[in-house]
Image 1 (cartoon, rainbow, N blue to C red):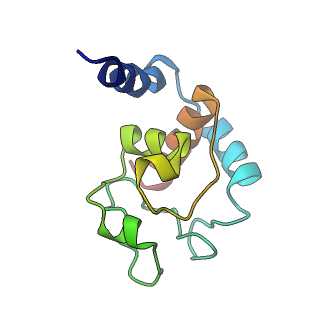
Image 2: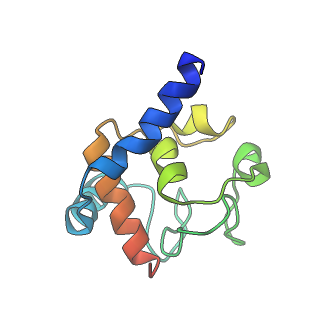
Length: 119
């Protein structure tokens, strides 16, 4: 297995090792994400409620970058972790440049978004 492939597999597994805390994720999301996002309304970024299981670029009343709009990504724990790690590396042409560096922080934010998606 090539190093880059092995690294991708290991990075995808890390959030599973952390017992994600949706309540902490709500606090982190409020602190870090509400400058651009809302749960129920589009702002600079698209609304987040219901993001789990949704295809990237699928909120009908939001104008996405071409890269996100044309992607085949469906949001789940793995894809959201990769997105929050480095959006522009995950989907070429993405406008979002904000990154969440800490694995535990990403896992908690993802747990919050999953809860807010009714899952």
